Amino acid sequence: MSAKSALCLLAIAISWTVPITIQAEDKPPAAKLDAPLPDGWPEPSAPGEISVKEYPAYRSAVAKSGMTMDRADNVLFWQLFAHIQANEIAMTAPVVNTYKKSNDGQQVEMEFLYRTTKQGEAGKGLGQVKVEDHPRQTFAALGVQGKMNAEVYQDSLKQLDAWLQKNPQWKQNGDPRRLGYHGPMTPQAKRLWEVQIPVKAVDPD
Image 1: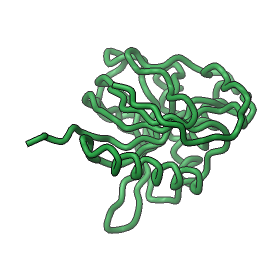
Image 2 (image 1 turned 90 degrees about the horizontal axis):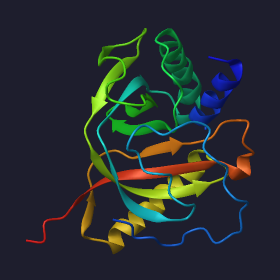
Image 3 (image 1 turned 30 degrees about the vertical axis):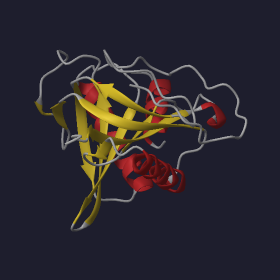
Image 4 (image 1 turned 90 degrees about the vertical axis):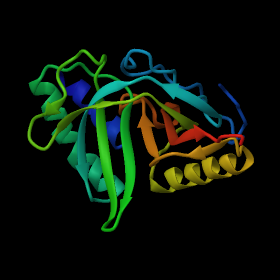
């Protein structure tokens, strides 16, 4: 894998539709994706749009850390990059970060996604990396364009929480995650992200 591809991956790491408009400010057109999506994955949400999205079962390389968001991004990236390079796994987008609360604080899980569920094998990867299969799941997703940091992430979660309050037919069903679609070759103002909360339908009874 080239140095350019590695930089793209690093920046991505550090870095039923019911639409509503959240972000009113004008933005330049978003850039095309840096890499292909895994098979069956939906396109990124438009900036400022919240929608409910279905994701198919998929396979990914996973690394974990108890560090803060920014510090974990750098450490986990290199673990995952070494794994996909050693196993000749092609680059895809997005890079997925899931943020889990524990008794010791917050744990960050970073994923590099495999293109198909038939690629490679689930189990132990290189070093601390594990290759895991994930079931299909439903998410409430907010599209974000531009800068992404802890403040933007937390603000996005607040917007999703407010949306759930207004849409009681859905309830949270797991830990939130952040999806990053672009790398350093893309101007920051044109980069796409999503912040997502897993949801499930509420039984009307």
